[in-house]
Length: 420
Image (cartoon, rainbow, N blue to C red; front, side, top):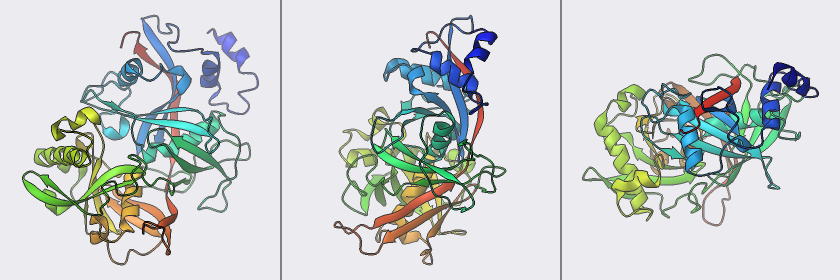
C-alpha cells in the first residue's frame, strides 16, 4: 500500500485509536492469509501487536490474518517465534517460556462472551506448539487489545481502585472452554489506560490495575471437575519412589507436590532449578505419569506427544514470606515467576482440606488476599468462598481473581517465509 493510500484510509479511525490506526487499516484490507509479498523476498507480512501481560509477553494476532487451524498455522506461528531454537534468534521469541507465547483474538459469536481468545504456547528449543489451556498473564492483555482494536462494546466494569473507570470484557478461552472476566481501566474516550500506580513482582515500573476474574474456571482443562482423579491426594511413582500429589484443574491443569519430595527446598531461584537436570527429568516423569494415571496415555514416556506443557507441575513449601512458596515447571524449565493460571489453581486448592497445598499453607492464611511467593517476588490473589459449599462439598468461589498490569509494546508487521 502506498503512503497516500494509507493516509486516506485512516479517515474515521485515527481520531479514536491514533496509535493503532495503521494496523487496523491493514486488517480491514486483508482478505485472507497470506499477505502479499510485502518484503519483496518471498516472505509473508502479518499485522501483529506485541504485548506484555503480567510477567509474560506475547504476539497478538487477529484470527483472520492467520491460516486456519492445522499444520500451516503451526508452522507460521513457530517461525514467527523463531522456534525450534534455544535462542529463538530468527524470530520474536525471547528464549524463555514466558516470552514464547501467542494470543489469537476474534469477536465472539457467543452470547456470554465478547471475544474468543486462543492461547498458544510455542516451544523454545523443542519443536512443539500447544493450543490447550491458558496463560493467566497473557489473558490480562486480551481485554486491552480488544478495547483498543475496537472489537468490543462498552460494558461497565469494576476495579480495586474506585477512582478508575473500567470496562468489563468477557473473554472465552478456547483452550479451557471457559469465560474469564477482565475489568480494564479506560479513559473518557474509551481507550485502555496503561499508566497507573499498580506494581507486580517481576515487572519494573507501574501500570493500571486489570482485575482478572477466574471464579468460573473449575474443571477448565479436562472437564472433570476440580479434582480430575476424584481424590484430593493421589500416589504417583516417580524415580522409583511413591510420592503424594494433588491433581487440580482450576484455570489450568496442575499437579502439586511437596518440594522436599523432589529433592529441592522450594526456595531456589529459577536458574538453579532449570540447571538441575535431575529435577527437570523428574518433572517430565511426573507429568507423563499423571497423564497415564488419568488414562490419557498408555506410555508415560510418550506424554509429550499428547501435550508438551500440561499438566503444570507446581512444587510447594512452607512460606518464608506470604502464605506459600511455589515453583512452577514449564517447557523444561522453572518459570521465572508464577503463571497466572497456576496462581489461581494454587489459591483454589489452598481452600480445600487434605490437599498438598492446604497442608503446607501458613495457618494464618485466612485473609481474602492470598500471597504466593515465587522466584522474583510475591503474587497476590483475591479469594472468597461461600461457607455453605455446594453439592459435592467443594466451595463456591464468590471471588477468585488477581490483578495484573499490561502494556502494548509495539505494533507492526512480522514476516515469515512463504514456505516456513
